Amino acid sequence: MRALERKLVRDLWRMRGQLVAAALVMACGIATLTMSRSTVASLETARDTFYQRYRFPHVFAHVRRAPTALLPRIADIPGIAQARPRIVVEVNLDIPDFHEPATARLISIPERPPFGLSELHVTRGRLPEPGRGSEVVVSETFAEAHDLHPGATVYAVINGRRQALTVVGFVLSPEFVYQVRPGDVLPDNLRYGVFFMPDRELAAAFDLDGAFNDIVVSLTPDASEAEVIARLDDLLTPWGGQGAHGRRDQPSDRYIRDELSQLRTMSIIPPGIFLSAAAFILNIIFSRFVRSQREQIAALKAFGYGRWAIATHYLGMALVMSLLGSAVGIVAGWRLGVAMTEMYGRFYRFPVFDFEFDRTG
Image (cartoon, rainbow, N blue to C red; front, side):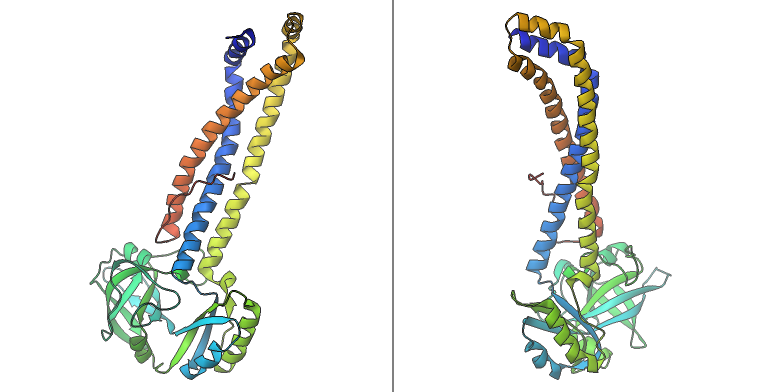
């Protein structure tokens, strides 16, 4: 080991307390950066994959009552790739062993998959079979909150009549990744759920045979969302249309985008504060250290060491601190990112939601 290398080891040991403190501050910044960017990558990958595979619509519209004869005119709107009419109603629930008010959004589905848009991912059980009017599938979060199982019975007030519904499966929907009652901010899975029932049975229950009160639309790649929404509103307004909207105003997607925006902010501001503080501390430490070593620097020059060799020696100390802080920060950020992904998995329900380490940070 050369003389400067031995000196580096001695100096590092002598300053170990100060260097470890600076390294830990730096590690906090690296950990926050790694955690935030990796969580963003994990959430975006899970969302985009779910949306693509299960055909999350681009445009949504609700109407008081519109005839199915209107569908060919809707399909002819330039930019629309596919349209799926359906029935969406809010109903009150009566759940065994639960004595508080509860409501559900009841959504009609085609009798046989694929549905074309807003496909359902079955996590347990099966989809309803045609001709069995009392069968429904329910959102997984609601089923878990009430400890339901396939075959359980839930009562709903459908068009003024109390009706027994048989739960035959639990599902995830790209429209309800974040399931929250309209107007609420936080999920309340005990008091609000989403139920899916075959088109024919739900239409008969609400006297909507040959009609629909909700429609979802997918767009072609070159479509103008604003133009499609305007034309769709023109067609639906005479039938009580309540204004079509895109994904940006879809509640679940909006919550996900807001959360991603907050995570991106977290990946910039806190790491910047920690790393700036680490740089400031490091500057103070080495400024004082170099001033205290003037005599040794002069002796090194007298023994023939050049400025570059001496500068490299002191830069090596900073490099060791940086490597230590980076290593600790990356490992801590990875562990925190895994924990964050698991936490988000309780609120945002995807078929696959795995931690994805972001290497671009």
